[in-house]
Length: 168
Image (cartoon, rainbow, N blue to C red; front, top):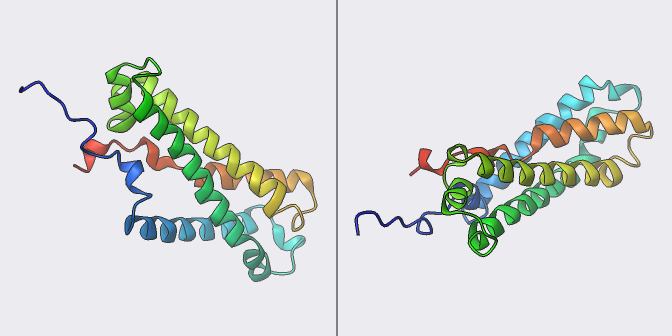
């Protein structure tokens, strides 16, 4: 009985991001980060040359960037959830499942799966912002591409890589 491990008793830290009241903290934190990234993009990519003002650019983009980012995070977390719950039936070893759920860096395959889930989130953030959020605001396609990539890279769910064992 000493060797029994209860992997499903403790949720992975990334999974907790979607539970009340933690979700309120997650939403607020994402909003602050998205705000800082939008402001940084405005200055880094010299959008003042093409936009009326930072305030107008921010007002037209923040809600979409924030909501699309959160939806993309949910998509990435869903991938991890599916692998974590259905890993046995998908032929994954217990070490890989434990790595996905609790300690990513304990298993190379777990890290790869988590990075793939993060890349799915980043791709969604990029596509949604490039095609929807900034399509009318930033007419220059190269500039829009740069802004959408910057937002996707800086706001992707880096917390997926945090080992749960650090918090329990």
